[in-house]
Length: 385
Image (cartoon, rainbow, N blue to C red; front, side):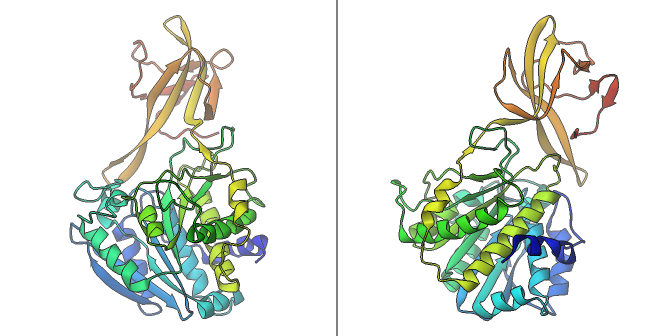
Protein backbone atom coordinates (compact mmCIF):
# COMPACT_ATOMS: atom_id res chain seq x y z
CA UNK A 1 0.00 0.00 0.00
CA UNK A 2 1.33 3.43 -0.93
CA UNK A 3 2.31 5.43 2.17
CA UNK A 4 1.45 8.79 0.64
CA UNK A 5 -1.98 7.52 -0.40
CA UNK A 6 -2.73 6.51 3.19
CA UNK A 7 -1.64 9.89 4.52
CA UNK A 8 -3.38 11.91 1.78
CA UNK A 9 -6.76 10.67 3.04
CA UNK A 10 -5.95 10.74 6.75
CA UNK A 11 -7.95 13.88 7.55
CA UNK A 12 -11.00 12.23 6.01
CA UNK A 13 -10.88 9.62 8.76
CA UNK A 14 -9.44 11.47 11.74
CA UNK A 15 -11.94 11.30 14.60
CA UNK A 16 -12.53 14.99 15.30
CA UNK A 17 -14.39 14.52 18.58
CA UNK A 18 -11.25 13.54 20.52
CA UNK A 19 -7.88 15.28 20.68
CA UNK A 20 -5.09 15.99 23.11
CA UNK A 21 -3.46 13.85 25.76
CA UNK A 22 -6.29 13.60 28.28
CA UNK A 23 -8.69 11.03 26.84
CA UNK A 24 -10.89 9.30 29.42
CA UNK A 25 -13.87 6.98 29.26
CA UNK A 26 -16.29 9.90 29.01
CA UNK A 27 -14.37 11.08 25.94
CA UNK A 28 -14.94 7.86 24.00
CA UNK A 29 -18.36 6.87 25.32
CA UNK A 30 -20.31 8.92 22.70
CA UNK A 31 -18.21 7.39 19.91
CA UNK A 32 -18.88 3.88 21.18
CA UNK A 33 -22.58 4.67 21.31
CA UNK A 34 -22.42 5.82 17.68
CA UNK A 35 -20.55 2.69 16.59
CA UNK A 36 -23.11 0.35 18.17
CA UNK A 37 -25.37 0.81 15.17
CA UNK A 38 -22.52 -0.02 12.76
CA UNK A 39 -20.04 -2.38 14.43
CA UNK A 40 -20.42 -5.15 16.97
CA UNK A 41 -19.80 -3.29 20.26
CA UNK A 42 -20.06 -5.37 23.41
CA UNK A 43 -19.21 -4.93 27.08
CA UNK A 44 -16.58 -7.43 28.20
CA UNK A 45 -16.96 -6.56 31.86
CA UNK A 46 -16.35 -3.83 34.40
CA UNK A 47 -13.20 -2.23 35.76
CA UNK A 48 -12.21 -2.19 39.43
CA UNK A 49 -14.20 1.04 39.79
CA UNK A 50 -17.13 -0.29 37.76
CA UNK A 51 -16.55 1.38 34.40
CA UNK A 52 -17.32 -0.57 31.21
CA UNK A 53 -14.55 -2.25 29.24
CA UNK A 54 -15.73 -2.49 25.66
CA UNK A 55 -14.85 -4.65 22.69
CA UNK A 56 -15.38 -3.61 19.07
CA UNK A 57 -15.43 -6.47 16.56
CA UNK A 58 -15.26 -5.82 12.83
CA UNK A 59 -14.52 -7.96 9.78
CA UNK A 60 -15.29 -11.47 8.58
CA UNK A 61 -11.86 -12.84 7.72
CA UNK A 62 -10.01 -15.82 9.16
CA UNK A 63 -6.96 -13.80 10.24
CA UNK A 64 -7.72 -12.66 13.78
CA UNK A 65 -6.02 -9.49 15.04
CA UNK A 66 -6.42 -8.37 18.65
CA UNK A 67 -5.70 -4.72 19.51
CA UNK A 68 -5.90 -3.05 22.92
CA UNK A 69 -5.06 0.48 24.00
CA UNK A 70 -4.76 2.48 27.21
CA UNK A 71 -3.69 -0.44 29.35
CA UNK A 72 -1.88 2.51 30.92
CA UNK A 73 -4.47 5.20 31.47
CA UNK A 74 -2.16 8.12 30.64
CA UNK A 75 -1.15 6.74 27.23
CA UNK A 76 -3.94 7.88 24.92
CA UNK A 77 -2.27 8.55 21.55
CA UNK A 78 -2.91 5.04 20.27
CA UNK A 79 -6.54 5.21 21.42
CA UNK A 80 -7.11 8.22 19.20
CA UNK A 81 -5.38 6.48 16.30
CA UNK A 82 -7.59 3.41 16.80
CA UNK A 83 -10.72 5.51 16.35
CA UNK A 84 -9.21 7.05 13.21
CA UNK A 85 -8.63 3.51 11.96
CA UNK A 86 -12.23 2.56 12.68
CA UNK A 87 -13.45 5.49 10.59
CA UNK A 88 -11.36 4.19 7.71
CA UNK A 89 -12.66 0.65 8.12
CA UNK A 90 -16.22 1.96 8.07
CA UNK A 91 -15.69 3.37 4.57
CA UNK A 92 -17.12 0.70 2.28
CA UNK A 93 -15.89 2.61 -0.77
CA UNK A 94 -12.27 2.26 0.27
CA UNK A 95 -10.59 -0.75 -1.32
CA UNK A 96 -8.14 -1.04 1.57
CA UNK A 97 -10.99 -1.36 4.05
CA UNK A 98 -12.75 -3.93 1.87
CA UNK A 99 -9.57 -6.00 1.58
CA UNK A 100 -8.84 -5.92 5.33
CA UNK A 101 -12.36 -6.80 6.42
CA UNK A 102 -12.60 -9.67 3.92
CA UNK A 103 -9.38 -11.30 5.11
CA UNK A 104 -9.26 -10.27 8.77
CA UNK A 105 -11.42 -10.01 11.85
CA UNK A 106 -10.32 -7.25 14.23
CA UNK A 107 -11.04 -7.39 17.95
CA UNK A 108 -10.40 -3.95 19.42
CA UNK A 109 -10.40 -2.91 23.09
CA UNK A 110 -10.05 0.88 22.82
CA UNK A 111 -9.55 1.42 26.56
CA UNK A 112 -8.54 -1.43 28.84
CA UNK A 113 -7.95 0.81 31.88
CA UNK A 114 -10.84 3.31 32.02
CA UNK A 115 -10.22 4.13 35.70
CA UNK A 116 -6.60 5.03 34.98
CA UNK A 117 -7.72 7.09 32.01
CA UNK A 118 -10.03 9.17 34.20
CA UNK A 119 -7.29 9.82 36.76
CA UNK A 120 -4.59 10.16 34.07
CA UNK A 121 -2.44 7.54 35.75
CA UNK A 122 -0.40 4.63 34.48
CA UNK A 123 -1.91 2.29 37.06
CA UNK A 124 -5.55 1.30 37.55
CA UNK A 125 -7.96 2.19 40.37
CA UNK A 126 -6.14 -0.15 42.79
CA UNK A 127 -2.78 1.40 41.85
CA UNK A 128 -1.74 -1.76 39.99
CA UNK A 129 0.19 -1.61 36.72
CA UNK A 130 -1.88 -3.89 34.50
CA UNK A 131 1.18 -4.50 32.35
CA UNK A 132 2.79 -6.25 35.33
CA UNK A 133 -0.28 -8.29 36.24
CA UNK A 134 -0.32 -10.77 33.37
CA UNK A 135 0.61 -13.80 35.49
CA UNK A 136 -1.05 -13.31 38.86
CA UNK A 137 -4.17 -11.64 37.37
CA UNK A 138 -5.14 -9.82 40.55
CA UNK A 139 -7.22 -7.15 38.80
CA UNK A 140 -10.59 -7.36 37.05
CA UNK A 141 -9.12 -5.72 33.94
CA UNK A 142 -6.40 -8.37 33.72
CA UNK A 143 -8.90 -11.19 34.17
CA UNK A 144 -11.18 -9.75 31.50
CA UNK A 145 -8.27 -9.43 29.09
CA UNK A 146 -7.07 -13.00 29.74
CA UNK A 147 -10.55 -14.35 28.93
CA UNK A 148 -10.60 -12.31 25.73
CA UNK A 149 -7.23 -13.63 24.58
CA UNK A 150 -8.36 -17.20 25.27
CA UNK A 151 -11.57 -16.62 23.32
CA UNK A 152 -9.99 -14.91 20.30
CA UNK A 153 -6.73 -16.88 20.08
CA UNK A 154 -5.37 -14.19 17.76
CA UNK A 155 -2.97 -14.63 14.89
CA UNK A 156 -1.41 -11.27 15.84
CA UNK A 157 -1.79 -9.13 18.97
CA UNK A 158 -1.16 -5.37 18.97
CA UNK A 159 -0.19 -3.97 22.39
CA UNK A 160 -0.65 -0.20 22.05
CA UNK A 161 1.24 2.19 24.34
CA UNK A 162 2.91 5.61 24.60
CA UNK A 163 6.44 6.46 25.68
CA UNK A 164 8.13 9.40 27.37
CA UNK A 165 9.92 12.25 25.66
CA UNK A 166 13.29 10.97 26.92
CA UNK A 167 13.61 8.28 24.25
CA UNK A 168 15.96 8.66 21.30
CA UNK A 169 16.82 6.57 18.26
CA UNK A 170 19.98 4.92 19.49
CA UNK A 171 22.36 7.46 21.00
CA UNK A 172 21.53 10.11 18.43
CA UNK A 173 19.80 13.48 18.57
CA UNK A 174 16.77 12.00 16.79
CA UNK A 175 13.67 11.57 18.91
CA UNK A 176 12.06 8.12 18.84
CA UNK A 177 8.75 9.30 17.40
CA UNK A 178 7.47 5.74 17.04
CA UNK A 179 9.01 2.62 18.57
CA UNK A 180 8.21 -1.07 18.17
CA UNK A 181 9.07 -4.28 19.94
CA UNK A 182 8.74 -7.96 19.25
CA UNK A 183 8.70 -9.06 22.92
CA UNK A 184 10.85 -11.91 24.17
CA UNK A 185 9.20 -15.18 25.12
CA UNK A 186 11.90 -16.45 27.49
CA UNK A 187 14.87 -15.17 29.50
CA UNK A 188 17.26 -16.06 26.67
CA UNK A 189 15.27 -13.75 24.36
CA UNK A 190 15.26 -16.47 21.72
CA UNK A 191 14.23 -15.55 18.17
CA UNK A 192 11.25 -17.88 18.02
CA UNK A 193 9.03 -18.47 15.00
CA UNK A 194 6.35 -16.38 16.70
CA UNK A 195 8.74 -13.47 17.17
CA UNK A 196 9.91 -13.69 13.58
CA UNK A 197 6.34 -13.07 12.43
CA UNK A 198 6.13 -9.94 14.56
CA UNK A 199 9.50 -8.78 13.29
CA UNK A 200 8.34 -9.27 9.71
CA UNK A 201 5.34 -6.99 10.29
CA UNK A 202 7.37 -4.39 12.21
CA UNK A 203 9.89 -4.23 9.36
CA UNK A 204 7.04 -3.42 6.98
CA UNK A 205 5.78 -0.62 9.21
CA UNK A 206 9.30 0.74 9.56
CA UNK A 207 9.69 0.80 5.79
CA UNK A 208 6.57 2.95 5.54
CA UNK A 209 7.52 5.29 8.39
CA UNK A 210 11.04 5.88 7.07
CA UNK A 211 9.45 7.59 4.08
CA UNK A 212 7.90 10.29 6.27
CA UNK A 213 9.89 10.40 9.54
CA UNK A 214 13.33 9.12 8.48
CA UNK A 215 15.69 7.95 11.23
CA UNK A 216 12.99 8.50 13.85
CA UNK A 217 11.83 4.94 14.52
CA UNK A 218 13.23 3.03 17.49
CA UNK A 219 13.32 -0.55 18.69
CA UNK A 220 12.24 -1.00 22.29
CA UNK A 221 14.35 -3.04 24.69
CA UNK A 222 13.39 -6.73 24.72
CA UNK A 223 14.40 -7.57 28.28
CA UNK A 224 12.19 -10.44 29.43
CA UNK A 225 9.62 -10.13 32.22
CA UNK A 226 6.93 -12.80 32.26
CA UNK A 227 4.67 -10.52 34.31
CA UNK A 228 4.36 -8.21 31.28
CA UNK A 229 1.47 -8.81 28.92
CA UNK A 230 3.46 -8.98 25.69
CA UNK A 231 6.01 -11.39 27.17
CA UNK A 232 3.23 -13.59 28.52
CA UNK A 233 1.52 -13.75 25.13
CA UNK A 234 4.77 -14.52 23.31
CA UNK A 235 5.49 -17.18 25.94
CA UNK A 236 2.18 -18.73 24.86
CA UNK A 237 3.25 -18.58 21.21
CA UNK A 238 0.97 -15.64 20.28
CA UNK A 239 2.75 -13.19 17.99
CA UNK A 240 2.67 -9.81 19.74
CA UNK A 241 3.79 -6.36 18.64
CA UNK A 242 4.34 -3.50 21.06
CA UNK A 243 3.61 -0.03 19.65
CA UNK A 244 5.06 2.99 21.46
CA UNK A 245 3.82 6.46 20.50
CA UNK A 246 6.67 8.89 21.17
CA UNK A 247 7.54 12.55 20.83
CA UNK A 248 7.45 14.53 17.60
CA UNK A 249 9.04 18.03 17.80
CA UNK A 250 6.70 20.51 19.56
CA UNK A 251 3.97 17.86 19.63
CA UNK A 252 3.33 17.49 23.36
CA UNK A 253 -0.34 16.79 22.65
CA UNK A 254 0.82 13.92 20.38
CA UNK A 255 -1.56 14.88 17.59
CA UNK A 256 1.16 14.53 14.93
CA UNK A 257 2.41 11.26 16.42
CA UNK A 258 -1.21 10.10 16.29
CA UNK A 259 -0.97 10.28 12.49
CA UNK A 260 2.16 8.13 12.42
CA UNK A 261 0.51 5.53 14.65
CA UNK A 262 -2.49 5.53 12.31
CA UNK A 263 -0.13 4.99 9.37
CA UNK A 264 1.51 2.12 11.23
CA UNK A 265 -1.83 0.48 12.03
CA UNK A 266 -3.13 0.79 8.47
CA UNK A 267 0.14 -0.43 6.96
CA UNK A 268 0.33 -3.44 9.26
CA UNK A 269 -3.24 -4.69 8.99
CA UNK A 270 -3.21 -4.27 5.22
CA UNK A 271 0.08 -6.17 5.04
CA UNK A 272 -1.38 -8.96 7.20
CA UNK A 273 -4.47 -9.13 4.99
CA UNK A 274 -2.43 -9.45 1.78
CA UNK A 275 0.40 -11.75 2.86
CA UNK A 276 1.24 -15.01 4.53
CA UNK A 277 2.79 -14.07 7.85
CA UNK A 278 5.61 -16.57 8.09
CA UNK A 279 8.50 -14.52 9.48
CA UNK A 280 10.23 -14.11 6.16
CA UNK A 281 12.84 -11.32 6.03
CA UNK A 282 12.50 -10.87 9.77
CA UNK A 283 16.16 -9.78 9.92
CA UNK A 284 15.12 -6.32 8.66
CA UNK A 285 13.73 -5.73 12.16
CA UNK A 286 17.27 -5.42 13.46
CA UNK A 287 17.95 -2.54 11.07
CA UNK A 288 15.90 -0.45 13.52
CA UNK A 289 18.21 1.09 16.17
CA UNK A 290 17.45 0.24 19.77
CA UNK A 291 16.07 3.10 21.84
CA UNK A 292 18.38 5.28 23.86
CA UNK A 293 17.42 7.73 26.59
CA UNK A 294 19.23 10.79 25.30
CA UNK A 295 16.63 13.56 25.59
CA UNK A 296 15.29 16.03 28.12
CA UNK A 297 12.45 18.43 27.47
CA UNK A 298 14.61 21.54 28.03
CA UNK A 299 18.35 21.95 28.47
CA UNK A 300 19.87 25.28 29.39
CA UNK A 301 23.60 25.48 28.76
CA UNK A 302 26.05 27.66 30.71
CA UNK A 303 23.53 28.88 33.26
CA UNK A 304 24.86 31.08 36.06
CA UNK A 305 23.68 29.35 39.23
CA UNK A 306 25.18 31.71 41.84
CA UNK A 307 28.47 32.06 39.94
CA UNK A 308 28.57 28.34 39.05
CA UNK A 309 28.32 27.86 35.29
CA UNK A 310 26.28 24.71 34.80
CA UNK A 311 24.00 22.93 32.37
CA UNK A 312 20.48 22.42 33.67
CA UNK A 313 18.08 19.72 32.43
CA UNK A 314 14.34 20.25 32.86
CA UNK A 315 11.65 17.63 32.43
CA UNK A 316 7.89 18.14 32.39
CA UNK A 317 5.63 16.27 34.79
CA UNK A 318 2.11 15.76 33.49
CA UNK A 319 -0.36 16.65 36.23
CA UNK A 320 -4.15 16.52 36.03
CA UNK A 321 -5.77 19.42 37.90
CA UNK A 322 -9.50 20.05 37.73
CA UNK A 323 -9.90 17.92 34.64
CA UNK A 324 -7.16 19.79 32.80
CA UNK A 325 -3.76 18.35 31.98
CA UNK A 326 -0.87 20.65 32.90
CA UNK A 327 2.83 20.33 32.10
CA UNK A 328 4.92 21.32 35.11
CA UNK A 329 8.69 21.79 34.61
CA UNK A 330 11.10 20.32 37.16
CA UNK A 331 14.89 20.35 37.30
CA UNK A 332 16.14 16.76 37.00
CA UNK A 333 19.87 17.27 36.46
CA UNK A 334 22.54 19.89 37.08
CA UNK A 335 26.02 19.20 35.70
CA UNK A 336 28.98 21.16 34.36
CA UNK A 337 28.26 19.49 31.02
CA UNK A 338 25.08 17.52 30.25
CA UNK A 339 25.55 15.15 27.32
CA UNK A 340 21.83 14.67 26.66
CA UNK A 341 20.00 16.61 23.96
CA UNK A 342 17.13 18.97 24.67
CA UNK A 343 13.92 19.03 22.70
CA UNK A 344 14.38 22.73 23.38
CA UNK A 345 17.83 24.18 24.16
CA UNK A 346 19.08 27.61 25.22
CA UNK A 347 22.62 28.84 25.73
CA UNK A 348 22.67 31.29 28.64
CA UNK A 349 25.93 32.72 27.32
CA UNK A 350 24.04 33.95 24.26
CA UNK A 351 20.43 34.32 25.42
CA UNK A 352 19.31 36.00 28.62
CA UNK A 353 17.72 33.28 30.78
CA UNK A 354 16.24 33.49 34.26
CA UNK A 355 14.86 30.39 36.03
CA UNK A 356 15.04 31.83 39.48
CA UNK A 357 12.46 34.40 40.48
CA UNK A 358 13.02 33.52 44.16
CA UNK A 359 16.76 34.20 43.91
CA UNK A 360 17.59 30.83 45.47
CA UNK A 361 20.30 28.31 44.62
CA UNK A 362 18.79 25.92 42.06
CA UNK A 363 18.68 22.25 43.00
CA UNK A 364 17.49 19.01 41.48
CA UNK A 365 13.72 18.49 41.96
CA UNK A 366 13.03 22.25 42.09
CA UNK A 367 9.81 23.13 40.29
CA UNK A 368 10.21 26.01 37.85
CA UNK A 369 7.26 28.40 38.04
CA UNK A 370 8.47 30.96 35.51
CA UNK A 371 11.10 30.95 32.79
CA UNK A 372 12.22 34.32 31.43
CA UNK A 373 13.88 34.28 28.02
CA UNK A 374 15.18 37.67 26.87
CA UNK A 375 12.69 39.27 29.29
CA UNK A 376 9.77 37.33 27.80
CA UNK A 377 8.01 35.48 30.60
CA UNK A 378 6.72 31.90 30.27
CA UNK A 379 4.48 30.52 32.98
CA UNK A 380 2.34 28.18 30.88
CA UNK A 381 4.12 25.11 29.59
CA UNK A 382 5.29 23.40 27.44
CA UNK A 383 7.42 26.03 25.74
CA UNK A 384 7.71 25.35 22.03
CA UNK A 385 10.17 26.40 19.34
